[in-house]
Length: 139
Image (cartoon, rainbow, N blue to C red; front, side, top):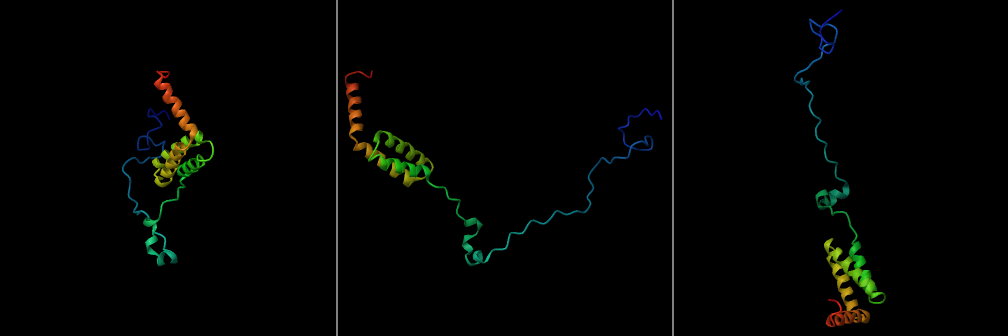
């Protein structure tokens, strides 16, 4: 049983030790692919309202978080902590506008600007800054 061929060769007339392996092109066994899945039958409600099909459904609701925060900060800035809440309202309003929450963002931005416009501390700080520039203290 000293055969010079390695045992990895397939079985043939000269090497009967291994089972035969088939290497080559695939054979078509006559299988056909499964038919595509049929769409589900419409419900009675969908039959009564055909305009609400899957292609006309609204996208999922995304709450206007930045816009609501902008309005809340802007309106609250009228009453308390204007120098803290008005800039937060401006930032949240800009983020809301970037997220396409135009109405909420603009209301928040305008209320923050109005809150700053009527705040005496804001105008006092603006006056001190102007005076420092005029006197050359800020370089």
